[in-house]
Image (cartoon, rainbow, N blue to C red; front, top):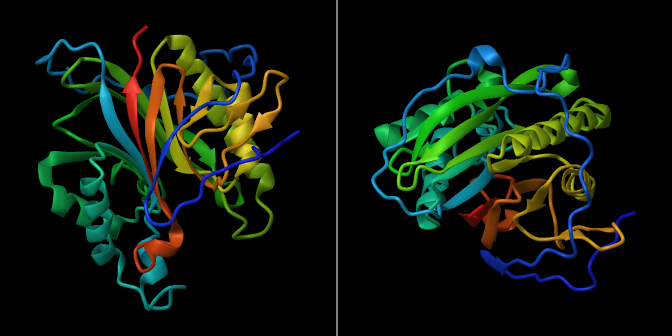
Length: 312
């Protein structure tokens, strides 16, 4: 059963919301096995490796960071013959996208539809200041869902992916990385997903499968005792929220929760773009630049949140 809260805030422009979670999270289901499941869930052992050691300059115990999720609208949509061919091309649209990251102090972002032309523009503009995974390491569809981070703040510790069923069920590598805060040494997992839309007919069965894999990942990482942030375009609103927050120890950056009786109370208004965090992630402020104000940049809103890693 899904029940919406009786009151919700709406604001024009870039909304800033201070969050309260309703009730307690429903107890999660038994933890999944740590072995890689047959459907491609879990981190791929061949792609998981130590990449760097954090720079321990500061022994502060609390990590503060800002994370965003942004479907940048793939380059092909605004190229000749695309659905929005009158808009600036993907390379040009990357500049205002980067301005949003800079303006709101984002240091980790989950991109969706980041096509190779846009990745190249991102890399040219940021140089060695930012890194992205998987970037151009695999096929172009894997590139679309890259996680990027500011190298001054974060160092890569481990990288991997889930093979998520995407359009017509085709498996696409979608990233899971463990990053270390260079200032505190704290480590956080970040995962970024794009679940399929109904582009080629009803894709609900593939969204169901993708969602279950992502919930299983969240439970496994929680079992490891490492905080997790999930970003993405899930192409589901309340259904995704209620499943993720009831079956895994996760909460949404824009609020919502569960009553003591277990009734799901999604945030209002919600959307198909999400940022979730596990229990040790505290969300402070949530920012949403609505889709109408993103015209000629993307057909999705821009979401960001200030986060703090809670002490054990």
